[in-house]
Length: 402
Image (cartoon, rainbow, N blue to C red; front, side, top):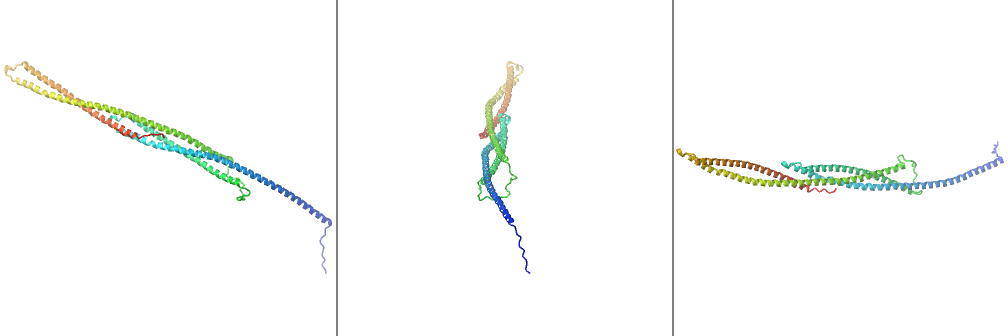
């Protein structure tokens, strides 16, 4: 039995027409929407292109401004770096002057101390605390004071140089960073849309956590500049102070050296004058001793010369005592002989007294001679110490301006 085939559903003509009209309308809507989208896309593309171009121009402008800012501060830093570098070199030269000045005090101080030690070898009455001694002690105190002051000044200069170098280091570090920054920004400024080096970098559109504000950035360099200028000014003031100290210490040392030398000159002249007077007195004493020796010799001879007359008179008296009986008369001869013996004995006694006085005077003259000779030797020793040893050394002292 044959199979019956069922026919597909049939649409009406209205349905077919409506379907076509619907499709036309939908196509028109989609086409209109597409046209609007195309127009809007073109406008958006143009708008974003213009915005991108504007943004790039703004970025380039800001990059250029930033580069100008960095270059401005870089120049300021360079100027301060030149200033602090020059000032550090200048202060270093002053430090060298202080070191040389300190070294130059050693010889005068050694000589002053040696002079004091030498003068301890003066003898007797010449071991006196005279003006020379006072001036030498003052010179030692002056030189020790100068050394202490120069040492403190040297410490100040060393510390200031350290501070200058620290300020210089901060400037150099800041300049190095700015050199890197300006190089980076100039590289960025030169990048174009068609540059070969540009790449997509995900996650770069952010503010770095360790970044600083423009104000902090500016303050950082400004602080470095102000610190460098402050240290430079301190260094300049210290150099002025050091220069004054060097001049004053040199003047003080020269003045005290001159005072000591003047005291030495006066003391040597005074000692020589005293030595000369002592020598004059010694010559007079020596002459007096010679005269006294002659006087003693004369007195001894005069006493000896009285022996014969005395023996004669005594012999005559003794012989006349042998006269017999009535001839033993107290005649004028007897009285005169007795008187003669008395006169001679009295003369001998007087001569002996004078001889004793002369001997005693002679001893006094000899003691005086010895005292004068000892004092002259003391003065000669003092003159040798002061004039030969001390002044001989002091001639090598040459205090120049530091």
